[in-house]
Image (cartoon, helix red, strand yellow):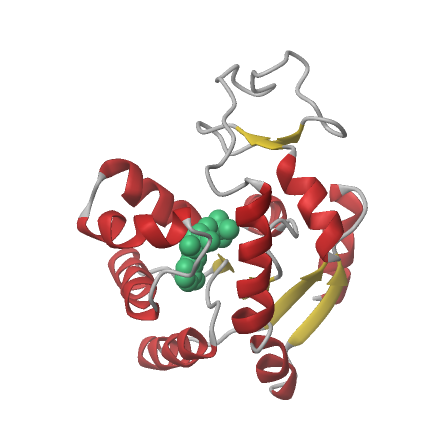
Length: 211
Ligand code: AMP
């Protein structure tokens, strides 16, 4: 199975992609995670991406398109869930070309819908584990021990782009650029719309039902 998750920043794409990947045995491909790691390591891609990421802007299409093409080809991935890619019409077109070259197609595009104000509240309080990716909310889903991951005890971190001003900028970018993907995939009859509010397992069940 090959899936794409679309939704605003903070809509729960990462959380749901992690569950789908574990339970349906799909490779979880997150361009945000790949770019953050590249930035941390100071690779050429990381250096190109850093300023855009810190400002809440999208990294140029050709940079992310190359990252994805290299990964799918090198690892010969055939069962995957895309988390945060494609994010612009140009990326969607490039992804279609890549998949056609690889002889693959996408079965469904899941759109997670969450209102902007809910997202700002979620992300302002978001802390995550740099080791295992577990995500917490300081108010509604705090870790058992403050500042430590429940799973492996690693010190939790807050993302640099989860400041309120940057969150609002990322939402603006989503509405201006990524939302255009919705009619594109709807027109192909593969869009599945799911409400992204509520508890994690309920949303997961809604996604599986929609598939
Ligand atoms: P995310 O973790 O998906 O919220 O991504 C964090 C940041 O990485 C975004 O705000 C962008 O700067 C960059 N990024 C991730 N995926 C993409 C993409 N498909 N196209 C452009 N920039 C991206």
